[in-house]
Image 1 (cartoon, rainbow, N blue to C red):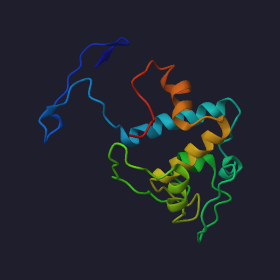
Image 2: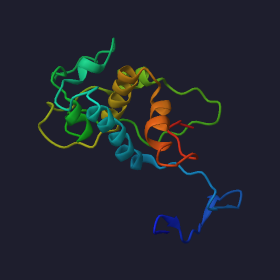
Image 3: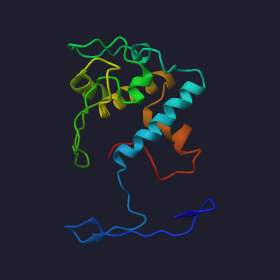
Length: 170
């Protein structure tokens, strides 16, 4: 609990590793999963505010050399706004996948090539999409010239005083 900008109380309950009997503590690292989407949107909106991106510009303007895989639906008119609001027509994407330390993970481009295939026309409805946020990640990397986690640390997490938070997937 934070009161007047300062931590007033903190506690942890349960297990960080139930099988090993290791209890959860206030210092245990946790994955925040989809809570990170709002922080990602903050990073994107910072670029919009700085005039480096436009909400209603087609995403293809910011994708560099990458192109959406073939699909039954057009991708040329998917906008930044649609990606942010989960109305781009892109699918949910794979969820619940865990990688062991040191295990090879697919690259962002490999994931996009496999998953960024629209399941409906862009702008025709809401469909929660992790994949759309992967596209935003690529766009942010192309626009900033930085890897996504580095940009988010430098521009969002660092200024917020969150040195133990990151967007490094592990």
